[in-house]
Image (tube, rainbow, N blue to C red; front, side, top):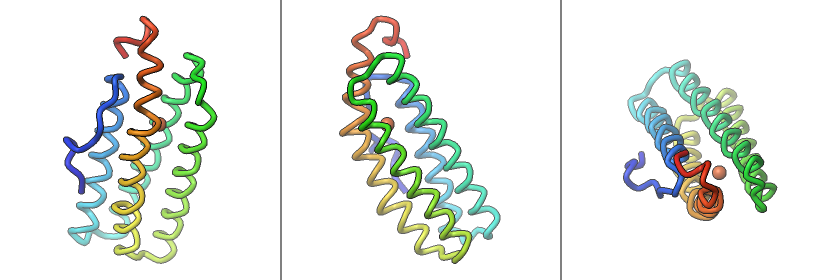
Length: 138
Ligand SMILES: [Fe+2]
């Protein structure tokens, strides 16, 4: 579990909203693991997380391309990498149904990644994009 207050904020409000939504989905999934929810409930929670991640990354990538952000490729590379890892973790979950392994992945890898990615990549991206008047209210 992570307190939403611990999620680093960037200068673009729409990105913060998306990040907080993602953390809420992640926390719901962790709660279902902690309360020994059945396989179907956990799997559906993981699906919800994966599709939110995909939409979240796509919306950032669209914005970076529109604004001609110079570090687009590096930033997208980091999204692609974590999405592949998450899909792999989902496959492992479906094959092995190992609650501890899934919890470990979510807490020790995905949440750590999210915090670092927001600080190292989303923060400079949001600062770049908000230079342009049209994105200020985003
Ligand atoms: Fe990002």
